[in-house]
Image 1 (cartoon, rainbow, N blue to C red):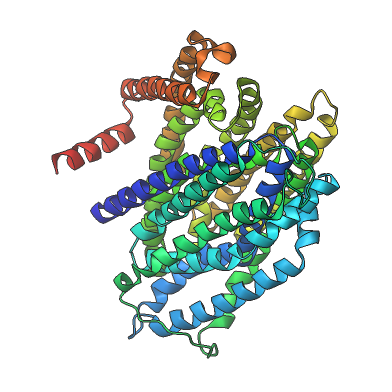
Image 2 (image 1 turned 90 degrees about the vertical axis):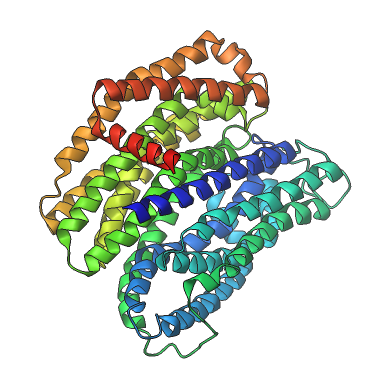
Length: 541
């Protein structure tokens, strides 16, 4: 447990630093192109496209297969070096091919994700995409290297490397502002003439975004020696167990396809609101949502997944059940606090990434919609990776199909209800809320299916703990909202500027956290005691 705690702390620190610098990166980017506008939506759609494609071809395979496979390969005489060399080579070839194919199909790809954009916005998005799509290769190699490091219990570099990406991007976007000026959110006609979105502007903005991804990949190479593995290009893929890996990855590949089809439909739906809270606000809110998710869920959950995979491989089901229970309670304690604090401070948080108070209030509804699903998504992380640890990728596919069907249903209902001029500003928030509700239903189904596989999971303790956390969060969130209202609410100083918004977030977050801890103490939460003891032990050291 000491090793797990140390690994979690290292990943949490790196992830926090990465996410904070990522937020600064978003602030600088929004200073360059804004958050409400056709041009900003065009860049966001293009820059997100390589990530979407990478998730289809690689992320599900890596998460579901690579960590358990490398744990097994590591038992070989060469520590798995031969198989990992083959897999890295195969991965590089597939990623390069996918990058080239995506650039050939760039027009239909942009249209699929932004079907409701006007023609000029689509044309600008395509121009950006040509500069951004090479990211597919570098995203993939970064993930291959990082997941291998994690599987070899070298947890830190993968969490810390994205900071380099953010620093490169911050500097590059700063250069863009210095050369071309800021807040260029309007389309201003996609043209090569001076004053419009000409080729130098597109090349600088898109090139900087790709350069950051290249830099973060190369950072991991400096830490590869810690794996103890010596790898080389190896095109002899026969004999590496591709049939076994393929049987596992076929389901995760289909699961990623389902996820991206749903995402594509959601983005196409919200593109109807371009110029208001639309694509850029969606991804910025998702970035804020991912800050607590990444720091809490990934930092604590990743070491647990490695340990859980080892227990599952050894057939120690009782220890797997214990891992599940501990992970849910630890994640729940912190995720409930994060949900309460960020919801209470939603408007000031949104003001950091928008240009005025009115935009902040509109964007805050999207953020709240996502936050509804933070705790369910944390539990889902544990449950889904338990299936992966047992080599079962088919069951997660089916409950992902269930979740996707619900998300599409909610998005369809949203476009029908919020298609008028008066209600269109709330369209993106409605789709985000539907995403969270579908995730909540998914985790219920997934947990039931896992219980059928492993027998009673002993989740009564976990559910009682989550209930305690929810009860403590009610007065905590009330205290945070009270601070916001006492400071003027939507018309107060917290929404006057970025600095004031940050100060407001600190005040609201502090009040929420204080009341939450006191409430947990009154409820005599044993999880609070465990966390307190851990912090005291760290301080004594």
